[in-house]
Image 1 (cartoon, rainbow, N blue to C red):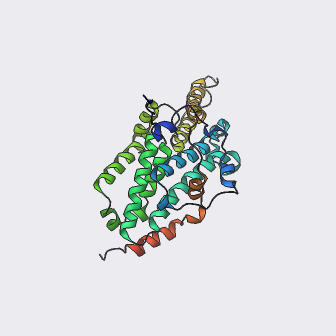
Image 2: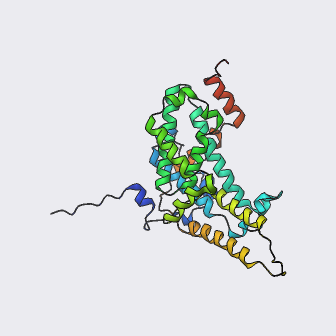
Image 3: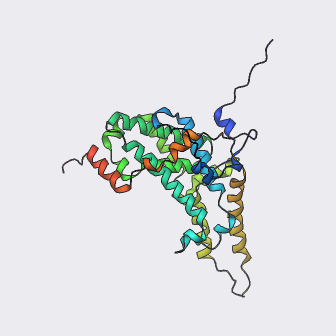
Length: 281
């Protein structure tokens, strides 16, 4: 009697502890790969392929930040690019991914294609959630909340109720409400690998740095402050050090990192007004 083959769900595979992991990958290497195949287009890529490679890229970028950059609020200083280059790269990568999503939706002239694009991106965000990539969820939901996209009433009118309900659920998960209360709960209850939203931790660190003195009234080092900062950095390191088991797909990352696909904010809004003009008052 033949043995039954165990089928492993792709998400479970990405979270498992065997096969090759992403710990050897560097974002610079991915960007500079010269033998990239011809990039795929959005229509030919599945939601699963997109979610996996977004998660891989997000984790590789997040993992690259050295712990020293989390000290002294360097990311808020004038010379932040010199002081905290990897935090700034992570922030830029977040913006690029979010811009790509918004640009992709606005790329379609007809309303049905735009609605289909929104539905697919929401599906990608939900797979990211299942893979504990909360940064990816926020990259996508923040794009869908851009004024240029949000105002497209005809387009949203064609988006299914199920997708809208799912988007609400995803937005609540990564909402900044209550100091990211829901996101913190998710991170507390999930086993790494995971990609948290970096901005949450930077806000925490800034709050501690600004609200707590370095020295006590007696002139002693405030070890309580040091412990609070150390606790946050330890949590960040925990998520940095556990890698995903996702195979790098050049054709997908080539698409995701293609800057020529990104439309700037002003042009995006002009396009939005062109495809769905304002209703007369």
